Length: 396
Length: 135
Ligand SMILES: Nc1ncnc2c1ncn2[C@@H]1O[C@H](COP(=O)(O)OP(=O)(O)OP(=O)(O)O)[C@@H](O)[C@H]1O
Ligand SMILES: [Mg+2]
Image 1: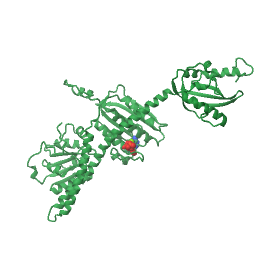
Image 2: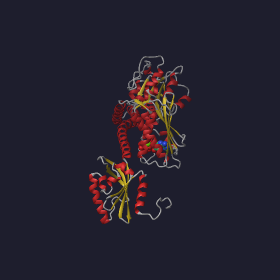
Image 3: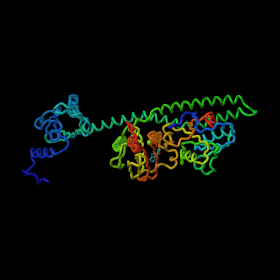
Image 4: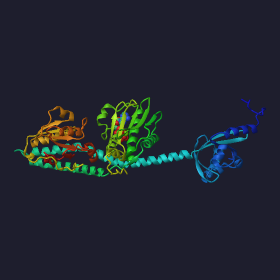
């Protein structure tokens, strides 16, 4: 163990210190050792990069020079409090703090502090990592997610309106027709019952009122054509996976993306398509939660004039009894979910001139949902207009 | 595309004088039992002969509708779609009158129909008035 010691002989403190600092010099993390008065004893190479000071400049100085003002004040209190009461605020805990560079710039660091009792007295060792990059990524993702949530909420309202209007239409149609038949029955023949006719009439009026509300709701929703623009599919899929995995526990789940090279763009409302994919991926993730072998894969490719995006999983598949009404609103089996996801998703697909379908026992063994969306209008119409009509399809 | 989406679309091929004839068979192809039953009840009261089919397949099993008949087809059928039913009917040698009904949003209907537009399209919720006008 001692054979590589160049000087041989007993280990003097200075040799040990030199060795220590050469070891610390190779560490990726910033390492600072200070004494009980918070004076810096050791400052490694990573720290020099992190804070812009050389080790010689800071040795002997109070560690506060590495901290922003507000934290420096608190630090004094922490140290003296700890030394007198033993109450730990940071030692052995590790947390996110802000550091201050020589040029005054502040940056987020992750700090863990340990303590050692040495012949020279109590010493503290701080290990620091610059987390600016990670912070920036987190912030960007948080922003993206917040944006997606608020945008999808708006369009979910629209879609929910459409879905509800559609579901209510059927029973309402039946009610109207039954009442009208009842009215006819009551007013025909010799035993006409004028009181009954009057009551049924009122019923008809109310049913008509309800149906006007539905029509108005439908008209309101239909006014809004989806906003179309050229959308590249591969980055959209990656973004969706990122969004889903960010907000959900997905330990042990293997994700795969299989996208054909040089995919053409689609003409679509990217937020809405994202909403569909997020829901499909989220459903897939929930489906594999209970199984051993957790796989979720998303593939994309072109078939004729359509883009086919397939989200498949290795879960248990859609329960057979759910299949007939799978795409109807409020059909879900989850306690948490509204069972609106697939209804909304299909309606978005159809509004884009595409469709959404389920395939049991997809490639992953579980369910596979297939989203079909027409390729961009520009390309489709260019192919259709071989005759050479001069019209340009403006695909926005 | 010239399909009219109001409840009072003027039938392009509506032969005049049909109104008086009571004894035609009205075929209803509708998967929603409530809607199918209510519609049948009402039409029978008016004096029509009615045949209900819950899906396209069961319509195809029976002898094809006669030219004086009317077929009311829901566009959102499971299995063989309403659009395919309309295509099949309109290619018969002596096609019956076709009334399409649907509760779907306008864009969806347009996309479903493509070139196979029926003469009459009524949107749900249906009223007696709207149906009777076209029979
Ligand atoms: N990949 C899948 N594997 C197995 N079952 C699925 C899958 N996707 C959906 N399902 C079933 O279909 C039901 C409906 O899904 P849908 O997305 O419409 O609603 P939900 O997920 O229950 O609720 P939410 O409104 O939050 O999306 C689910 O409750 C689930 O039972
Ligand atoms: Mg869902």
